[in-house]
Length: 564
Image (tube, rainbow, N blue to C red):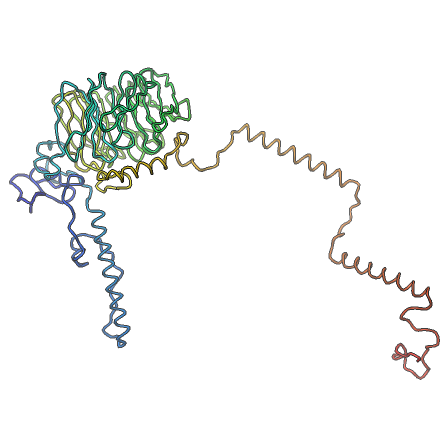
């Protein structure tokens, strides 16, 4: 057996990771930590693919052509089997390329006293692949700390915001600084906008927007006193909250202030956005969490979560679970669909920041350490998954890197990126976020995002109601029903008044009665004609005088007798 780098494993205990690799003291060669590309499978047989664990898309057994006497039919069957085998092999190879990475996790040796949270970052980086080990870094910047951190939607760029006046954008893949700005004001928070081209920083005088070159583009002084920023990608809205507890939404495409709501709960520095419905969540000093939309001036949901002030909160990607941390030392997980608590964890030190990864790993940060819980949302975890120690202390912000197994930590000593196996999605969707996009592809994606921009009034608590029929209020329904009943009563009264003078005749329009009426009209017309002929001189078809038949004519032929 070999390590991910190809070298034989050193002596010592072995821990097994999620994808079956082995290494000394741990094997973080999983998910986003793996940097090896898949090998081409176009020349392998279906048996080799099946032995390698790749799904084989077979269309059934081959046709038996040994007993077929018709050579033309046997050749057609062999060609069909060859095409089916080629298609199955191509489908398996495409599946291997598209799903090359599998999400893994750090696992302890079963049957032992080993625990994954005891594996330190130094041991993890020593055993990781070379490309993965470089992702773990420690930037020492004590003069401008503490820092807030944020990743771009593609996960390639990292934005740093030093509280003492420092902004920096770092290309995490190329490991270089893209831009650096030293504003003459305290930076309370920083966030990327729709992509890495623009970012916003909450400063004392307002929210300032910069491009990737560090040029100031716009100063939104309406957001003066903002402490927290969040960007709604589908709606192109920049949300902020801070001094006075005023929550604001501003459209970055037009510069229009969409809405501004006063929470009336004092200053607020805790905010998160639900990725599922774009509802803004705010944590307040009285222990409540409120949910806001730009369409309503009052919170759509108000939850009492803790006995003390809410220090941090986070929502998972599905929008089903909400994690809150309070000054009472508890970390609670809530079901957003029912607004009921699921379970709670106890924190020995006050929690200052929280984050949830793409694969639902919960990171809880206290001043000197970060504890990561695996599978701790839907069910209660019995022990932590990983632990990251911070000797400098003063933790300020946490952010998981999208599509990678990296956690960025902003603290009083600078910024640290830690390896967390199994945190990010292993499969990268280039239609959602492409870290390798060229400038032209990025511009086209920006145009598509602007065309697909959702209006601010589409932000509702339940997105499934969009497109349905709005139910009018109860008072409006009752008024409409009363008006319809009055109109029907008036119509019925008019119809009765109209029919009172008419004699009722049953069966007047029956088919037989209509036929008899037609025959009566015809007979009356013939009667008038016959009367005119008779008055003129004996007209008619009956027998005339003198035309009586002789006695010897039979009675049956008497009517046919006519004298000439």
